[in-house]
Structures are given as structure tokens and as C-alpha cells.
Image (cartoon, rainbow, N blue to C red; front, side, top):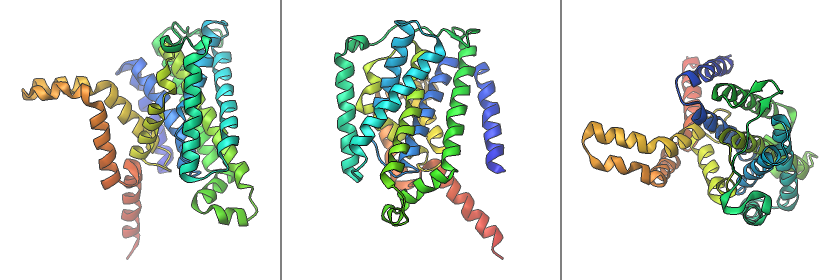
Length: 327
């Protein structure tokens, strides 16, 4: 009941947010939040650390951008093609990497993602370092004009809610329980008769498809797609988002994505404001030190918040509830 109430409050805040904040920035937050949730499905609920998830985000973005800008397909078709491309890439990468574990699995995904990066750099339809430009938003269902930021925001919010609801359903399904068993003790899951590789491969493809949904939506929102979205640094950034927010929690990756993306985009403004309030000129250079600030946040979470922000809050709440129940 508490979770349902929290989700309802969060949805109400999200519905009212574009009347307070900048809609394009809010849409970017939602896209990265969905990306982090997709990654969390793999690492938090299956125990697989992928260093190549940016490949799915960027591939879907390029396919969707090409479908809308060059082929002239409608919005829905472009999004579907992007998701299918990411799922297919996830299937190929998963078949190659899924039989390895630990650091070997992570390194294989990183190597395959770098191959995707160099392909994006060389293929003609991606336009190399220039990237895809001028991607049109089109119309939703042929009726709603998505060139208006407010209309686009609510479509993106609906996509995020649908993706998040799918993740919640997966986690709480029998399939999700098997994934949890694989994460906790894979040899025991094998001894119980489960085809572990099949379950891990399906989880990998689902995570890739959801990451592709985030990438396709992001391309439509911003109107362009660049090599940044297939670079390995973005794969590291989504790991940071998930760990800071709380790996293995539903709300943690959302909070982590909001925090990291807000820091990357607003730290310079916050530094200028602090410099004006305090008279300390050093604060005005904070915008140039985003990497240092996010690195310090990561170190602080590793040392002080091992479960992430949401994970620690949940653990503290559970401990408090146990103390109240104990006579």
C-alpha cells in the first residue's frame, strides 16, 4: 500500500512538473531514468554487470532517427524499429557473452559495445562524428502534434510509465523470482532444474529492448543522435546512476538518474548562484568539474551508502519497523 501511494504521488508530481520546469530537460530526465531502470533489471535483479549498455541506447537512437528523418516513417513506427534493433543487438551480444560470468562477461560486453561504437563512426547512415540531425517529432497516432513540448512531454511520460510498469511486472513475476534465484545462487538454480543461460539471455534481451526504448525516445525528444550515446563512458554513467540510487530497488535507478543528469546539466548554474550568494569565485567553476563532483558522490555512496540512497532508506525503514514490532 505504501508503494502504491508513493507511485501515485510521484505520478501526480510528474504530471504537474512541465508547468514548473523546462519540459525538454524533464523529458531527458525521464529517458535516462528508463535507461537506468533497464540496466538495473540486468544487474540488480539478475546479477549481470554489463559495460556495454550504451550500445543499445545509441543503436535504437540511430535507427529511430534514420526512420523518421530519412525514411519518413511515423513516430510509432520509428520507436518500434528502434526497440527491435536494440533487442536484436541484445540477442546477438547476449548469445556471445551470456556463457561467461563476472569480469569476463563485463569485458565481453564492453568489447562488443566498442565494436558498435566504431560501426556508428564509420557507417554512412549515422553521419559519423556529425551525427544525425534534424530528426522530426511527427505526430502521435497521426493526431497529436509532438512539436509542442507539452504534448511531447506527456507522451514521453506515458512511455516511461509503461516501461517502468513492465519492469515491475517482470520483477514480481515467477520469471523475476527465477532471476533473483540466479543472482543469489546460480549453482543452486541449476540444481533445481532451471536453464540458467536461457533465463539470463531473456533478461539481457529485455533489458536491451527497454534501453532501446529510452534511446529511441531520447532521439525524438532532442531531435538528434550523436556518438556520445554509444560511447563507453555512457555505459559507465548508467552504472553510476544505478549504484548511487540503489541497485536492486525499483525507485533507486530513477533517483540516481535524476541526480546525475541534473548535476551534469545544472551544476554550472548552481555554482554561479552560489558564487553570487557567497562571493566565492571558485563556485563559478563548478560546471567544469562535473566529473570530480560525480566521482566524489560515487565514492561517498560506496563508503557510506553501500545499498545506494533508496536502498539505505529502505533498510533503515525496515529496521525501524522491526524495532516497533518488538516488545
